[in-house]
Every structure is written in structure tokens, then in C-alpha cells.
Image 1: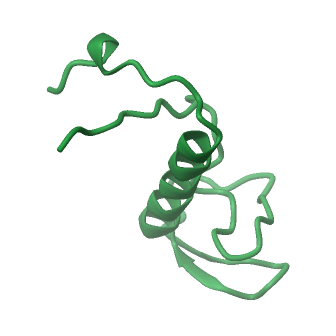
Image 2: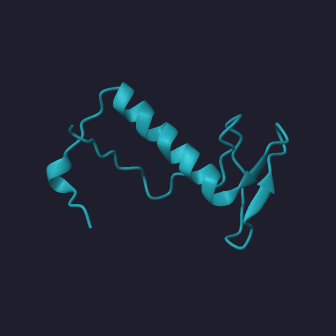
Image 3: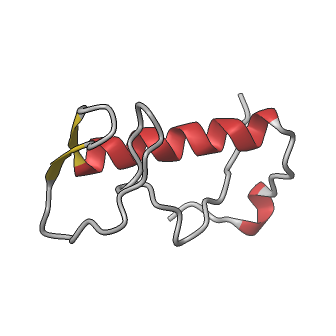
Length: 76
């Protein structure tokens, strides 16, 4: 089957946004690997949380029918 590629903006706050409630931390230094959301108290691993947020943003873009151009993005 075919695949779709959705580009996410470079400054999308994937690590700083709580994947449970949507709260966004104002700052989250790169050396902080785990953090707790002050809004819903969910504990996050920085990378897993970022992956969840990127997946959710991609699914929203696909659901809204945003154009996807796989020709312009080559696999590495």
C-alpha cells in the first residue's frame, strides 16, 4: 500500500506539549528527559511524549485533507 508523509513545522512543541491534556510548557531544557505535566500530573518521557504529539499532529493533518506530496520528500 501507499504511504503518506506529513511535514510537521520545525518549531512544533512536540516535547513540551502534554500528549494527554495539551498543556504546553513554556520552557523544557534539552537535558530534561522526564517531566510531569503541571496541569494533569501525567509523567512523560520526553521522546515518547514527542512521538505521540507528532503522530497526533500528522493524523489531524491527514483527517483535514491537507495536501501531501511524497514526490518532494525522498526517503533517506
